[in-house]
Amino acid sequence: MKFILTLVLFAALVPLLTTDVAAQTNSGAAQCVAELRTQLAELDAKENELNARAKQLDEALKPENLDRSLAGVGSTKPEELRGRAVDGN
Image (tube, rainbow, N blue to C red; front, side):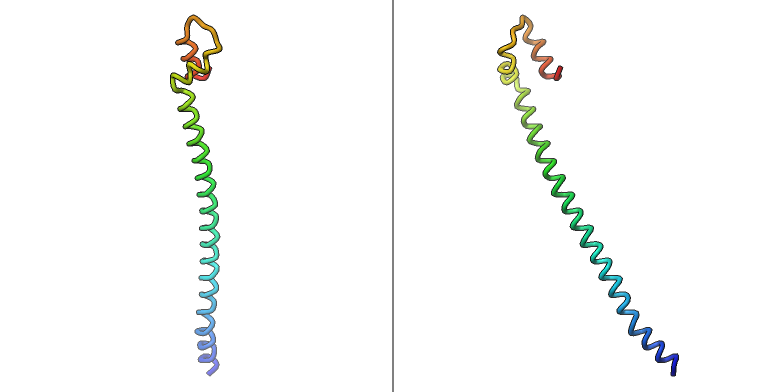
């Protein structure tokens, strides 16, 4: 009789323990999802900043904008000035 009572109690407690473990796993997964979403938002912001900077550089490297930026600098060899501006030297 004692064995049967122990078996019944064991059978009743096992589902409670597994439910607790499943809840902890779900909680950990939810936290991981939240962290990944935060990282994704940060990466999106960084990507937008880098795209804006790339667009700004593309605009600055257009020939007409290079000529405008070098208009105040006198030289007999404007091609060299343009080459320096493009190379960043």
